[in-house]
Length: 307
Ligand SMILES: Nc1ncnc2c1ncn2[C@@H]1O[C@H](COP(=O)(O)OP(=O)(O)O)[C@@H](O)[C@H]1O
Ligand SMILES: [Mg+2]
Image (tube, rainbow, N blue to C red; front, side, top):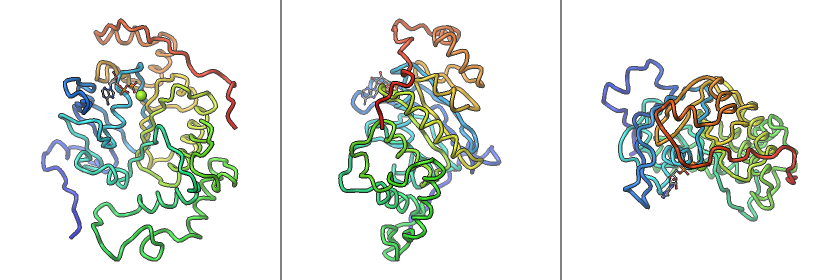
C-alpha cells in the first residue's frame, strides 16, 4: 500500500490556522556527520510562509549552507534535535526525494556536467519526478518517466518550457544545450532558475555561495527569482552577498551567527549590514568575532567573461 504522511500529533504544530502555507523551523540543531562533536547549527528558529522572501545572511562559515543542506536531507549532516514542519508535516522524516516532491526546491550548488543530456530532457525528467504524488507508493500502473503512465505529455511539456523560457528571457537554443557542458557561471544560474520555474516549488531555498559568483550571475538569480515571485512561492535566500539584496527585495532579513539567528528585521537590516558590516550587529547580540572575514569583497561589477 501507499505510504501515508503522518501529521505530528503534538499540539505545537497545530496552533497556526494556515500551517499548509508555511515552513516552520524550530530549535534546529545540526552536526556534520564527519565530526559529530562539532555543533554547527545551535537552535535555529524560522518561519517562511508562501509569498514571503526571507534572506539569511552571515559570514563565511556561519552555517548557511549547513542549514540549506539539513533542510534537504543531505547525508553529510545530521539533525540532532529540533523540528521542521512543512504544511504541518514532519519534513525531517521525508527522504530528500520526497522533500523535493513536497514542493521544496534546493538549487544545486555545484552542478555537474551531464554530457548527452539536453536541458529540455533533464527538465522533463525532473518535472516528472517532482510530479509524482507524495503519498504515491509503488503503484506499477504509475510511472512518471513514461508519458503513457502519468508523465507529462511532450506537447504539453514543450508548451510549459516555452512559457518559462520566455518568462526568464532565455534564448530558444538554451533548451538544446547539454546540461552544464561548457556552461558559464551565469548559464548555470539560468538553468537553475529555469529548473525552478518548471518545477514550480512552493518554497525555494537558494544558497548563493559560489565565491566566484560574479555580478552578472547575481543579476540572473535576482531577475529569475523576481520573475517567479507569486503568492504561492516562498523564498529562503541564503547569501553572503549584501549586494544581492539590492536586486531581490526580501520581506525579512536574518543574520546567522554562532549557529543561531541573532537578528531579524526588514530591509533596513540589510542596509545596515551594508553600511556597517557584521561587527556591530554581532556585538549587540553579545558575540565577538576574532576572524577578519568581515569584508570579503563583493563580486566585481561588469567584468564577467561569461557568455
Ligand atoms: N561536512 C562537514 N564536516 C565538517 N565540518 C563542516 C562540514 N560542513 C560544514 N562544516 C563546518 O561548519 C561551518 C559552517 O559551514 P557552512 O555551513 O558551509 O557555512 P557558510 O555556508 O555559512 O559559509 C564551517 O566551519 C565548516 O567548516
Ligand atoms: Mg555556504
